[in-house]
View 1 (cartoon, rainbow, N blue to C red):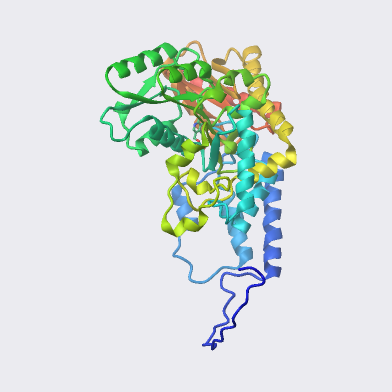
View 2 (cartoon, rainbow, N blue to C red):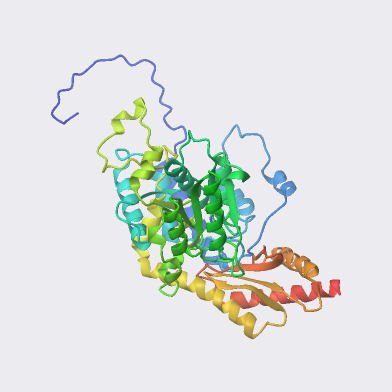
Length: 496
Ligand SMILES: *Cc1c(COP(=O)(O)O)cnc(C)c1O
């Protein structure tokens, strides 16, 4: 209603109005007191993180004793509650943002983005539709456009921020299927990717109702790249057998070794056979920021869709991933549905309702933290942070080849901040070395000094460092290598 419209005053009788508006509400004073305390806890944590043990955890039994109770009938004093949180909750986790967390893939976030998440919750943006959060939708569009530029995607491309790389891969595969497969067909649809591809792709296909007969896992060469000739042969064979090649997935940085598949060639193959090409860059795509690494991603701009994961190497707290699709309409046509109770929302196409671009209606404003941190630091700081991660892995490689080459053997050299190597002793069999390397990881976890993880490459169990935390120092890496050597030596004695 405009301001000039006439209001008719309707009189009504007050019937027993209860004045209990304070349910679930705190006074302004209490909010400030608690809020400042909480901020103090966060900042104390961040500033002392590097001195904390990395790998704390407790057993299920211990935690049952601490947290198991009936649902509380009465509330608890806020000081006691904060105390409980500090002593038992915040201290029984692995610190994945610790400078010596070198296992799996860490998430070294940043304070500005943490504040972003605070705003996200406090204002509770409804980022599903334009009219409910227009500025939020505009910012999401702007950040997606920034990413499009980085990845050389055309202007008509569209995208959305989702919860993680797993979800982005799932949504990409839904779009691929919609565009390349007629669901009424009784021909068998096929998906192709290397054996080094992340398990989230397997899971996404399972969710979509596909099984082994729809999946062709293509072997890799000695450098863990997909074997193109095998990929092409498989597609040709499937075409001859009247199957429908639907999608090829290229890795832009595998989780195991940081390997980038030959994207240009895969794009070519996809074009030749009219197949969707999805690039899974959840781990590695941030490396495109580094001018020395950029060439690895040539051809990216010709893909049909791309997954990238700001909550990994773009320094954002969980959860945020990004999906870009070559033509925004392909994404929208896959998800757009307009039920009668949402008709008020169907406005001009330019006013984007992000609920039409993915599976969620109610969704939070994930783009905010990413936007705030890019605005605050500028992309150059991100570039430097990514480069630091890459040089960390190179430093480990250099130390191993120049100083520790008797006791370590490199299995996959430093690639996009991932290096795989094993504790080695020439007198021991591969089987025993496999056991020793697994035990090294367990012992490192016990010592709480650093987190490392293992993986298996061509039947060789090895240690894997993922060094994307820009706060990791050379000393952190050296002391960790030293500890591994000491543990390895003890274990060798056991097996000799
Ligand atoms: C981590 C990862 C994923 C899954 O992403 P989540 O954010 O953990 O869901 C997918 N692909 C690759 C290559 C990854 O490294």
